[in-house]
Image (cartoon, rainbow, N blue to C red; front, side, top):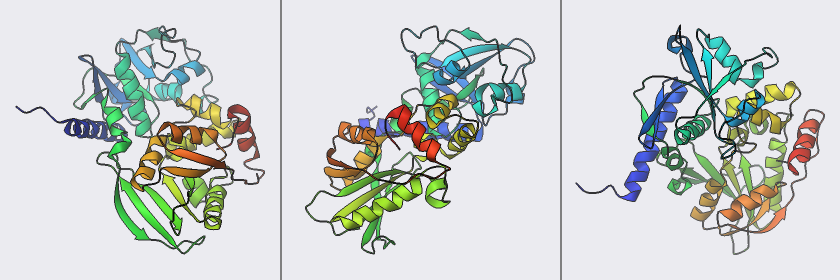
Length: 359
């Protein structure tokens, strides 16, 4: 039998991850395999918990490290890796509502008293970490009930293959006159596993000069609905205007809603902000990184457009660092100045205080 070529292996891994993510979104259990062992997991957010929870014995729950920190739990292996998920044990019977109250921080003020919880040894750390990443890629809360069996196996390293930006290709191209500039072309990008489509809008007449480029993460509430809680919509249109004033420019519209945590989780973060938490705390309480965006996608899009150097429109130095780490030369960082309003002034100020920059 012929060995599977590297590209074939990557595609097979990405497809397994895609099937696993689809299963999680539908509420089906998955089995994450690493080092010959399988960790069988049911997603808390979408799974039928009442059917899966036993009447006697114990229930094992897998949650993220940052969510565990909110619940004042400590990882026994924290000295080795403080980012590892935490597995806790609950005495049965326990209801689905009680499980959801543990993992959803939006309910913390409604159900403030939780625990005490008993930590369990993390039997398969690699599989547990991969499960957290698959939940994020599916836009779900990173929390699972450990179950006995499942029909959908996935390898722990399949999640990385699913997110491999080198699989992106240009799938479509057309002229698209926009309000800021009638001379514009749009390019659509797609990979063979991830169903998310990214787009690039090339504004103006391309020449040998370095283009003005904006990396803009999708924001349905700000870009489309005109939300006053953020400055995403105004930044988007200001960037297009600045590109028009330059020789030419490129808007990379990245489908990474909520800084990579997905639309539903972003709405949960909004609810936490209404309770007084800032953007940084909200993401961490949900169990995610402060910023889960993947800048390698933007770098791959620029590579496909044959753009090795950019002048980057951003208030965020981390975007510069992220692009340069992926091999893109950033000649200059250009600020995008947007006035705050009474609804987002706290949002902008807390982000600036906590991270040193705005979004």
